[in-house]
Amino acid sequence: TVSLKNAFSGDFYIGTALDESQIEEKDPKVTKLISTEFNAITSENIMKSMFVHPEKDKFNFETTDKYVAFGKKHKMFIHGHTLIWHSQLPKWFSEIKDSAEMNAALENHITTIVKKYKGQIDSWDVVNEAVNDDGSLRKSVFLKVLGEDFIAKSFQLAAAADPKVDLYYNDYSMTNPAKREGVIRMVKKIQEKGVKIDGIGMQGHWHLDSPKIEEIEKSIIAYSNLGVKVSITELDVSVLPSPYGLQGADVSQRFENNEKMNPYPKTLPDSMQVKLAQRYNEIFKLFLKHKDKISRVTFWGVNDSQSWLNNFPIRGRTDYPLLFDTNLEPKKAYYQVLSLK
Ligand code: XIL
Image (tube, rainbow, N blue to C red; front, side):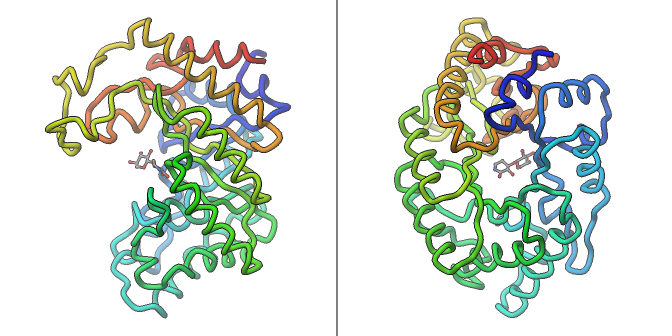
């Protein structure tokens, strides 16, 4: 059958993020689409600390067990997202001030989860979004309490819990030159300590005209030169104007009726479908050019109705960033990507 996963099977995994309703197979049409088109999955939310580790002494593995079972049933590559992240962090974790307590929490969190899925989960995002756009380290609770050692320490703990699983650093704006330098510095420090890091995840929350293909290419090459795998981990292409910098834009507001913020509230016009297809065309052409460096390309969601961009960075806006539309039908961009093979 013609599908994304079959078309790119000799090149890299084709993945999707799964939310709770998709994991629980609430809609058989959705399950069918996922199993036909994708051979890798990422947990969109359920592995995040606020869900999996809501209280200091309580883990919640109900949905994560279903997630792993889903991946096994469909013979997929299973990625875990994410162990250490400043966001979607439960209160008990974010309020720790003492370094011994933070070290113990980090160890318990990482060791318990990674051991539980040892040999079942194929790769982990160990640390997510620890670097700022200017290349400095983000002042998260982890940095404040433990200093930059928390990064190498997290990788070390994960490697000890499952020596065979692939360990990733994952972040956004990975094509921005200053950030790229910062990430490379950080990864080199991990490597110089003799700590295992296997991959770098470039999130890929991209737009029609940015980042430039040349910058994406520079990043793929630069990260690969560190001797690690590169994956595109959270791919979606927003067709909407970025609200940042637009005068008077308050990103916490809803903009349903504001044409500047939400120019295509009902459907994406044909001319824009073509633009999106062209953008995906140049992006996948580049991935194919560097297929020797890329191990997985994962979309951040299955189809447009379910994309997080409908609520980010402003709530209630309709975006059209994926290859399948709100009716689960393939878009022009889908056929464009397939036509490269
Ligand atoms: C997003 C999810 O898609 C949303 O459902 C959730 O409300 C917020 O998080 N970078 C990441 C992902 O690493 O975990 C984020 O996922 C998107 C940005």
